[in-house]
Length: 172
Image (cartoon, rainbow, N blue to C red; front, side, top):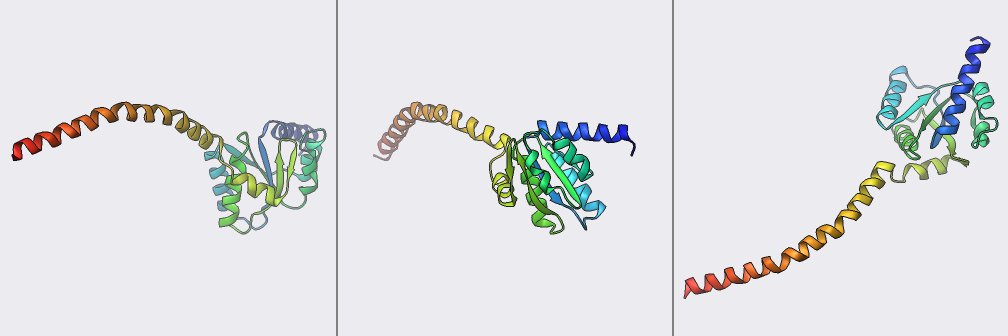
């Protein structure tokens, strides 16, 4: 890798560290190519990405970034999983690590906050952006359906009473 390529990698990594909602750093020693492809596919489906980079270049890219404190995690065979959604990368990485013990989560960063192993796990348990939007939409729609039910209830009650009276009249 020549100097120009290294500079390009540092620039790309710098963009990742600046624009990602969350970055998770893990050791991947022992993962097969198929397992790594599975992780990449899962991450892509969740809207995130996986990046393996030289630790030295990643540390250079971290200089001056809000999440500079995660530079200490960059040692050994590390893989970066990241996403714009502040939860997606942590969720997918956590699920993959539970199924595959070869992937060891070290920590990560969420904005300016450095996360340890427990922090990544806590973030992974939070609802994703899509889940939050669905919850809010459900909350917004609930009052309307309650009003519609309340408005329709008296009519159905009257219909039920009339039906009962009619049945009694036919029986007599």
